[in-house]
Image (cartoon, rainbow, N blue to C red; front, top):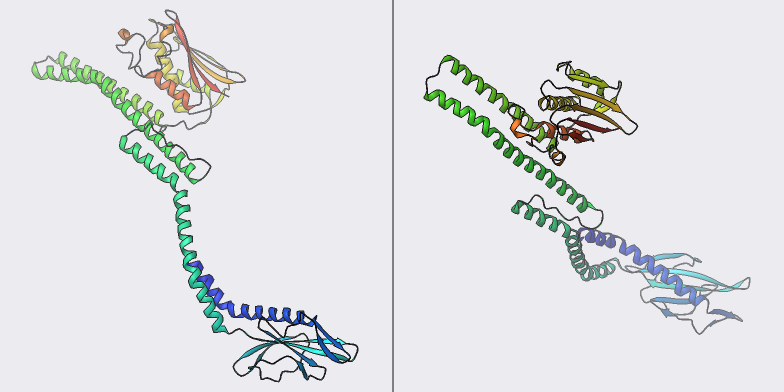
Length: 426
């Protein structure tokens, strides 16, 4: 604001002389025309009206006859020039160091007679105008800068008040480690509203990542405890006692099985965690769902797996994730099926959705436990879970369905079997 004020002052200084001279010329014209309305010529004699002024607002008015002889009025002391008359022309006359503004008007009386009305005014001096301008600026400019500074400070403080609240809340969240807290968006639609939304999204992602990390750590430590203990016990026994080659081979086989179990458990936990965090997203593409199911079914005994597929069902999906979903459901059907049991896979398409169902003739699920089977490590019959997995298969199925914008349902009758259905919107 100070810079702009100085620039404005400089422009005013550059133009003040010409502005002052133009103002003086306009003032001269107004006074002279006002006096001209009071002039009259009666029987060759000059007569002035009541509102005629020989000197007004710095303007000298003089009356000359048609022969340019002075009839009335008094010349300024400094005006010494013999200036010819020019009707209606305002000009500046140099009188030996002093400039005068001159304007002549002809008052006609009949065809041949009339009067010259001359107006004289001392032209404003440039240095005097400059001094007046600088004096005025010296008074006004500091006040202008002070008011502008205070006003700008008040506006900026008021405008950035939401930012102070955002900063304070963000610091409180950081210091208190409360990632569930959120910033309250300010009123209106502005940059601070978008900033608050960005902060809230960031805190939401941090909270999900933190919770996923805690869940992964808790799940891994809980589920790896058993195989690690078995491996540790087997190693301690082998170090403490002499084993026969058959016992050593059995110990190595047990360690190998437990290591495979640990590897599979870690792989599934990582996959679920990535799905939770969104780092393993569903790169959707158009694919044939029935063809994908038929390809997965090739890895299972055909005498125990039956397919009822509607051909040509195109969906938007991720082939690796949907393959894992089908495998988990089929594996789950065989693991919890009866001895020599059967699994059926069916695909259907309606106007509203596409469905993929996997049905088995296994132990079934009680009605009060059907909502819990999607939880991690939950098993309907833990006593039968010796080699049936860690209880992560259905949890991963649920996450994969969500990643495709769909959902899972289950229908089950204890002792008769279960049907798991994936619903994908068209």
